[in-house]
Length: 182
Image 1 (cartoon, rainbow, N blue to C red):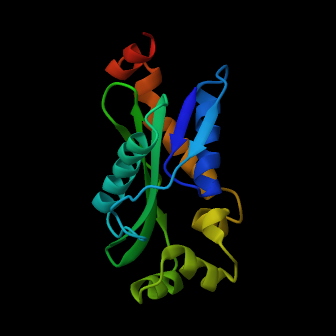
Image 2: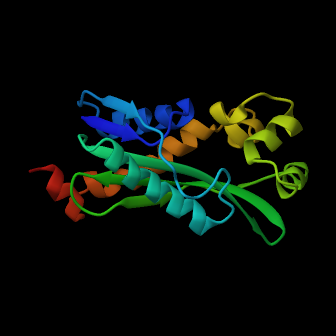
């Protein structure tokens, strides 16, 4: 099974591999990374921009590498809701036929010190690194790992969310699952 991930970030590639291994345990996976523009900028700052970024990553990865079974876009984003900075991600999966399937991750409230740095213009990963005195946390456990002492990680949350986005490809109640059986 050929899967194209629209990112070279090892967390996103690892989450994709984990999700596909979980849902397709008998498949031999060939996971390829490709860099594509999400159109959402370095730090999507709304739910809609983040969702659109994941979708664009999936669609553009298909354009870049058309010979695959699935194309995956993963996009992390932030949004201020009732004065609280929240972090979340959207996953988008395109199969050979059918619609793009999407799912949104659990939402993580971020500390005021992180919000202050993000509002001043820093990307979330850099703000987390400053507040938590870490380096390149977005390619590690991310804010999820930092705030839960590793109980949850960015890769784990992304893998779970990607499994939700893959449901239409494995559950017979969806047209995409019928296309997979051909």
